[in-house]
Length: 93
Length: 204
Length: 152
Image (cartoon, rainbow over all chains, first blue to last red; front, side, top):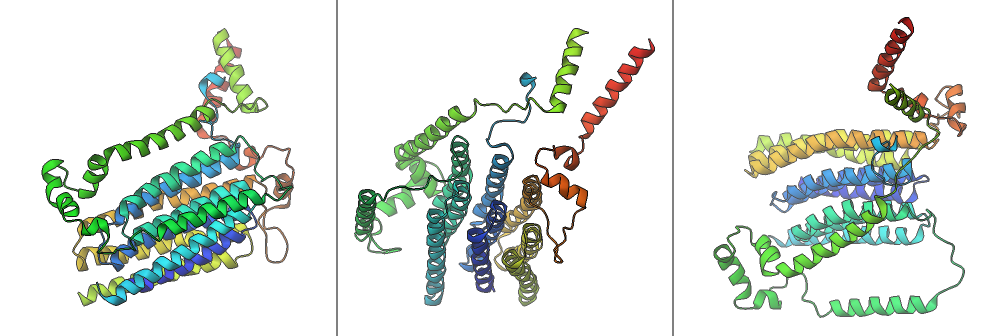
């Protein structure tokens, strides 16, 4: 059962990678990488069950949080062109 | 663990390593630098999965935090100072290619001397006291229940300190370049409205 | 034991359908916004069902309640972050003037709105993001203060 799960996730990871490499716009690539992040989270969790030691779910948990930060950072870069802190700050006024 | 399980594990690791190579070639071929940054995030995702599959959980944790989180942000910060598209290459730099190929070949030749993955006869495993000492005495000596933590933070503490210093220096360098620039949008009607209101308040 | 295996197997199978369908959709769908749908299916449906299956396995077969709790936490975090990330990607794409397409070649959004998107000089933020509530409240308060000033 876990083997089938891991195989399905790796297959869909390959499909998502095709989109990330082909993707006509940057947003397609970003969407594909974000989706690959979710799949990797599931893959790491499922792999622990496949080898019979489900103690390594910590890394899946960490990835669930880190992946989001990277996506938001890239989007902030898209929107503003830099990573400066805060849109308007009080002493700018 | 049965033989089948070992074969399955090896096949999964091989497939993931092949995907890593595909992503790396994609990063080299594509000209858009922002795309390269996004794909490097995908690369570190896959390499962390490989680390988990090869039981190097601590390295996978580091790769997750540094590779996917910090390095993407540092690369983006660097990118905000330069253009988004790679400069077209005007001349062929064969000398650089030769140097890179020779360095890569030397590194691959170096890996031939390393013990193979999970080898019971490797020096680290066959040394009479080393592994035994860590497993039995670390609880007494360092008083930390997790052996990996005590090796990482105490037995080879200077090494870890050096690594942390390198990452910290890189982050401080990039932040000191980045954090000083502020966005200003003078033509924004909301902002001018706020400014006017603030001035009115000050006048009152 | 067998019952738990069957139940979690069914959950994992449904989750696999979601994940694989989402991945195929991400490759086959014609434009960005439809691909967004496919990607979201993986983040919500696939993750939820597979995680439920894994939680059942961890709690009852592997006898490891800590792993079950960690997977549950993963669901909670991803259910906060994944929709936020999808929304941010969609908003950024809309801001970058990527127009949704329809099958018969006509744009699915209103013509006037499309013209607005194409006109890069116009400020899109007023159309896409109406003034946020605190701003409205403070505007209202200011207007009231102005009226009082006039009356006195």
